[in-house]
Image 1: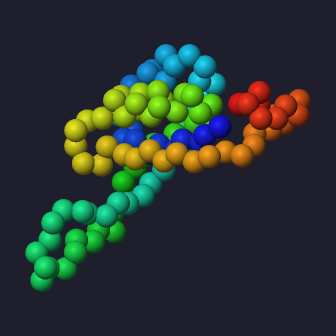
Image 2 (image 1 turned 90 degrees about the vertical axis):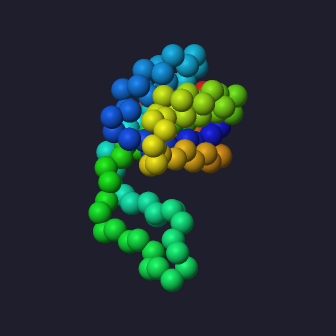
Length: 113
């Protein structure tokens, strides 16, 4: 099992969710509104101070737990549907999940996802 955490632009949420609903076997996603900042990675002259902004941007955080065989499809779906071609389109992180437990009936492992 894997956990995917994706940060996307808020105006792309409907596109991403519509695309994710088309994936057979995907059981769901959690959505949170978050705020944060990223580093300006543009080239600076060596004698210039790096740009620092105290401004935070609003993003949407998606959390998805899925079987290993769905990871590539979920990632490519998020990438294509969240893409605008502009800086700050977002990021996707993938982590291994050791165990899942369904609280209502005690199911464990893949059956709990």
